[in-house]
Image 1: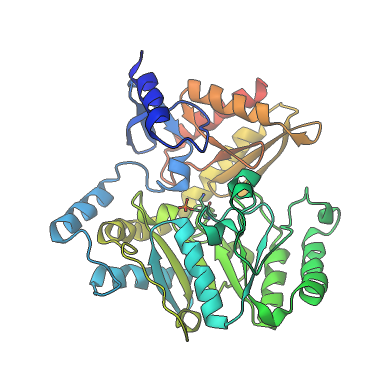
Image 2: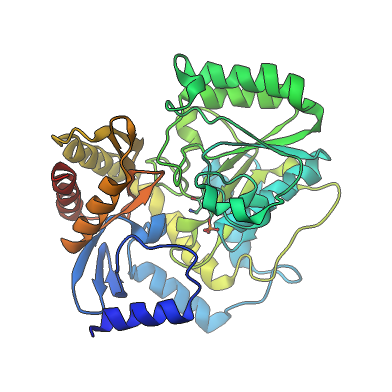
Length: 417
Ligand code: PMP
């Protein structure tokens, strides 16, 4: 029995198996944009630990910063004490979002979303939050109540949070989207939901991903986010953007909202923020973050080691945005040269790219599984999104040659279908 097979067998014995993996990678170590398995085989990382390792694996600056912090202190808890690192990273985050803001630290994406929901209710004194179909916001009860990208993620766990609504996301496969997608959805929200279903004065926030990640790399029309912001402002509803996957340079701007000409009230972050250590954050307008009632806190949020890594990430990522855009274009061109009749669309922004595989207009799930598994066998790591979308989220620092080789192999495997 190979080492990998033994570990996989023991994994099934000792770990809860409530999700399935795309292929049997058993990682041993990783450096830059290369991953090595326990049998010594090398892989090109087009996945980055699901959009986390923006600066690649084993980044020397992160290692040094975390080691220095380890020699000072690991953890002390911001709930009752202060430290300068927490202030420095918050100040940097606020300067990057570009508006007068404040920061709340969490440890993961779902906790950032939970915090944003509490802040929205606590600030407005209103109950309802409106989310969007096909979204992914996490798997704790609050965020799960807005997660609908796959029914297994929520169906067994009801009742979910009360006072929540889901409205359509402007995806062109949505029946509302036959013609003018943005306006059709906006009209539905303004003229139906906020007139007939819920009083806008009871709505605390709209919660959505500026580009849906888990749902299949769905990029909404620019006018949609602008229109939603207009409806939000008119009704005193907060615009909460979940940038857990899109934030920190992934889309070629520091935050995806910058592509759409909107200014959110609350932004949820995690994934790449901590450079591979668990860190989440909510960045919000100062006036929204000062809660007139209630309190929210946690033990580990803003852990000093995670913040030491984040300080490096926030220093380095702005300088990478140019290459994120050019590498993204290169990868899209390589994938776009496919001859496959199963590629319905290649979409995304920067280094957040999806290839939608469809057969006779329907999601081609077996096609996705084959492409991912065969690419893995040829030494390339990618994962899926939506029902049948090949999702690429490589490290933002990936070398051009590796990105070229990785995406060519994926294209060849799509062609082979
Ligand atoms: N929001 C979005 C947009 C995400 O993509 C994810 C994770 N895929 C989450 C929230 C949840 O993050 P976590 O798994 O860290 O809780």
